[in-house]
Every structure is written in structure tokens, then in C-alpha cells.
Image (cartoon, rainbow, N blue to C red; front, side):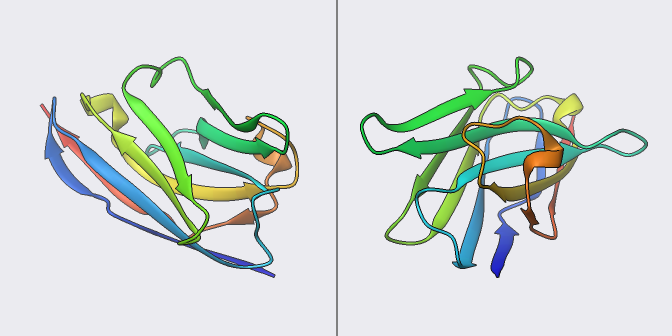
Length: 126
């Protein structure tokens, strides 16, 4: 079983920064793809970023176009923690952010993530 617990959400003004963390426990290891998704009120949960590891190339990352250049996903395997550094935040980034784990490599499909955290709220005011 896999447990994921997000933290680091909060309220910030447009242009500000936040760093989300996701503590992982259980059957996760570097072979899992770890992703961030978000869900705004009245909208579908959408992909934000993913990080996956392959032995011969190391970590690879992939981002949604809406966050590319502003958000950075990373992980510290020694601490079993996934991060999402969010810079230049916009009001449209307001959502509940979820971390998730997948056995698929670099997936952006919600259906391919088997484990989910409970979410953390991010609110960006203009």
C-alpha cells in the first residue's frame, strides 16, 4: 500500500511563490512515476507535472503547458518526499493540488495513477 500526504498549500498574491511537499510511505520507490494534479471548483482534475526515473537516464520531467517555465517538480528519494515549486503564481492557479503515484512512466493521464493524496488548497489572489 502507498500513502501520500501533501502539505505547503496556502494563500498568496499573484506573482508570489509556494512550495508544495508530498510525503510518501509504503511501497513507493524511485521506479514510481510521481505526479501533481489540481482541481479548481467546478472543473475536472487536471495534470500539472510528473517526474519519473529510468536507471540509465535518471529523472525525467514533463509539465502541462499552463505551468511550464513557472513550476518545477522534484523529489528527494532519501526523504521520500515529492516537491512542487510554484513561482509567478496566477489567480488561475487556484485549486486543490494532489500528488499521485503511478507505475507508468511519465504519465499525464489521471487514470494511470493508482494512489492519491488528500490534497492541499492553493489560493492565489489578484
